[in-house]
Image (cartoon, rainbow, N blue to C red; front, side, top):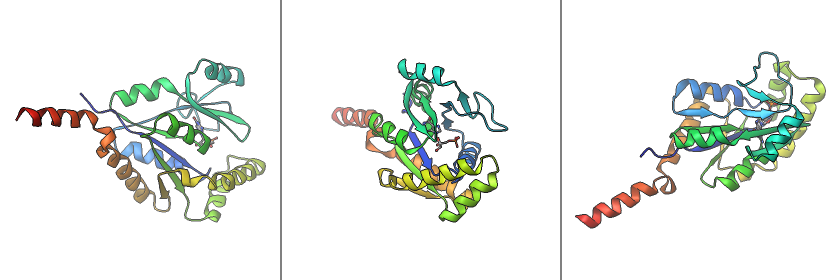
Length: 206
Ligand code: 5GP
């Protein structure tokens, strides 16, 4: 039987470069499945429904909450964001390593439900880089950028709940490090209980 996949949660301040990092990870390696979240925020230019997000109305989102279709959900700068349950469960059962790119409140809820999940926090080399990346992206108003920077300061208070920090300075190095950390999880005892049982019975038969 194929081992279950790893659940990896990736968080980081808005503008830390998570999106680029995820893209590179998925391009370089083929055992990953990136979960697509539902959100009530509007699509940015270039974003497509069902690709970056499932864009939902508040009503449709709240119905998913009621039907228990989301592993977790959170409010982030005035909008709902949540992780659909079916996709994650299915891909993990297929042996895929599933990546959730979500904010901190959601990450903590995932850890409660999936204690073996690995929690990674992506940071830019310094705070000014963050501000410059957010401004340079040109997709948000000044007001939204300010709200996101304020949120970053709040989120920085919760980083200790994560397992690993990734500094996103050199993209390739960061992707490599992320891949190694996630793949390392396959060696955890909790990930290999069946193998251990098999070995025990084989030993008894010798
Ligand atoms: P953005 O609007 O920039 O795409 O995302 C805003 C924040 O929401 C980011 O920190 C992103 O990681 C987070 N986010 C995206 N999807 C989810 C989700 O399904 N659940 C939670 N809790 N946060 C999410």
